[in-house]
Amino acid sequence: MSALPNLRHLRYLVALHDHLHFGRAAAACFVTQSTLSAGIRELEAQLGAQVAERSKRSVVITPLGHRLVARSRLLLREAEALVAMAAEDGNPMAGTIDLGVLPTIGPFLLPRLIPALGRQFPQLRLALREDKTGNLLDQLAEGRLDLVLMAFPYDTPGMETRMLFDDAYRFATRDDDAPRPVKGRRFDLQAQIDERNLLLLEHDHCLHSHALPALQHAAEVGRVNFSSTSLHTLVAMVSEGMGATFLPDLAITGGILKGTRVVVQPLGDAANARTIGLCWRRNAARRETFLELGRFLHTWAARHVKPWAPA
Image (cartoon, rainbow, N blue to C red):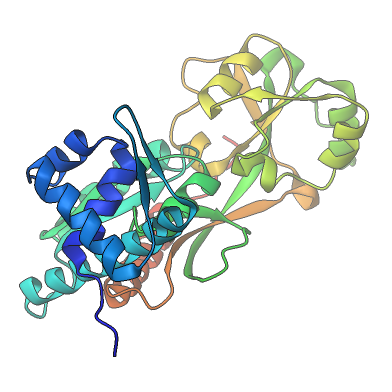
């Protein structure tokens, strides 16, 4: 049986990949530059292949090195999880979880959720990272994150998921541009879209991914503007009379409309909802922790996450 690379050398490789400098990589690993350089050479000798090309001025990671880094991150993450499990001594709800969260979820959910988590699991700590869905899933696959709080539907191959609650969308306009309800007539979403400039987030945000089917037509006739980068920016633009948008209940009940001229309308049968859930790597060492966390979040959300309702 061939000898296996040790975790220390894999950590050196990951650090070298991230810093592209032997001195900075060594500092990140708390070793001398000569120790890290020797470790990389030992790894290459063991593999029989080069993982980094060196010159006096630069370091270039080889294609093989890049592939090894992705796997090494996972191995290091799982090794750390195994050590954490032993240290927890039978308490899976302890230690630190590196959690990725969407910017369309985090600001509106976490301020309410984190205190409840602290009371329920006082030994559990969350290290938060906010980013777009694709970036978070890449970091999860690479072992940079343990868990992602995200919106579905979304394709997550190689991952395990736990759905928590639904989060419906509402039609948002400036108060003096709000559609006036007509007795006996249902809300005509398509007509409202056709009459206004529609503002959404950039294409790789979940608001666009989970958009209503009616938006397809709006996009085709060029009435959609995808230039905004956050829900707060969208609300500010709508408040200035620049168009209309869709907002999820989490943001509305989380206070995003305070101090603005934006009002929201229910969509009736035209409504669409995203589903908020957790995602982690299949067969993760801390799977039981994530399942328990998911059970708690599902129960908590049923009591504390309420849909928007007209005043």
